[in-house]
Length: 294
Image 1 (cartoon, one colour):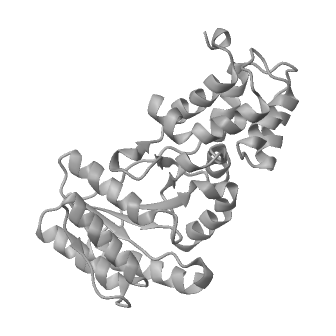
Image 2 (cartoon, one colour; image 1 turned 180 degrees about the horizontal axis):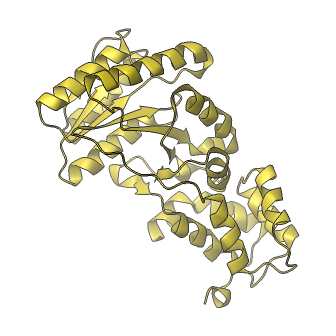
């Protein structure tokens, strides 16, 4: 919990401190409303939480149950598959897709897995170059082509190469041009079809990368991607640089999807597995006194 709070929620805690300088044994509804809004919990969700609390004095135990309820999405179950396990990474440009892919690859490699990357964001030459640099740095193979090449062909070639080389994981980057939503939707759907053609059941998991600094404004973006291609889970990046950590509640509640990881820095070890109990209790530690925590 130390790393999560100190790195990932530092600015969120500072925002809470601005409206609640001292920890308390109990909170009033007005105090709780200020704390939730300041940490960027969406107003509609704040209203739901407050309306479901009937006590005048809100204890840590009461608030913990309400916050955990907002994260009570269906548990993810990994599909049955034959190697390699293919992951499709989607999200708008600038959300941190490439860096997150590098962190995932590094994580899998540290676990003794063989990983291959696929640079299927062929819309931007910079995306191909950046992912190639990361692959070289981490020491994993990558399949890429020239800018403008068919991204689904890159995905196909990556999976075929991974199968031939007995890889455990395939991570495929994609473009994220929401301003051309129809074209992007068609492109992602085609990549999905071609992945399944190359390896039955692929992609086995589709992860959406969300920029944590966008807070609740990322919800509409996430819904658009989910309608396009279907999302299995979320990774929230850049939480170390924002006071909007409370938006995690809004994002999870609105999308009803699991949050797999959070990004709290640039290094591979800064991709942390999300644990809703640690997250909630970490925030509560900053709001309530130790006496109430016992």
